[in-house]
Image (tube, rainbow, N blue to C red; front, side):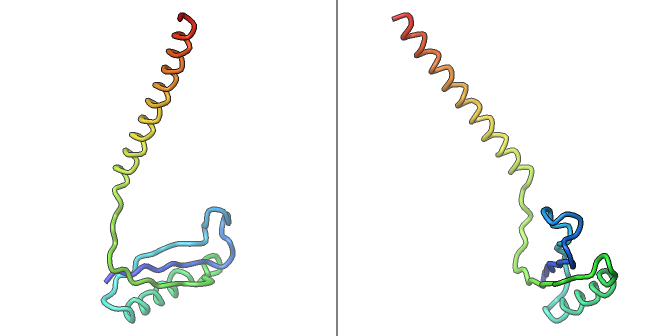
Length: 105
């Protein structure tokens, strides 16, 4: 089973606006009890000194994890941007056409 742990450090970290003091880590375990133990060990080993002390830790059991197709998403964004640019150009050309049509009629 996949588990994710959300760790929030004491204080605001480097900049409260970007959440430097927050992180999400993966915890591989076969059940929740094992995940809790592994997270406890992780906290003891890596989050027990002054700069990384935690205020809170939350453990989530994930039934499914889906990796989003980031390249496809950004390609779609670019496509939408190009479509909007084309629409705007056509609108500008239509206004110019109507202006010239009115002028020479």
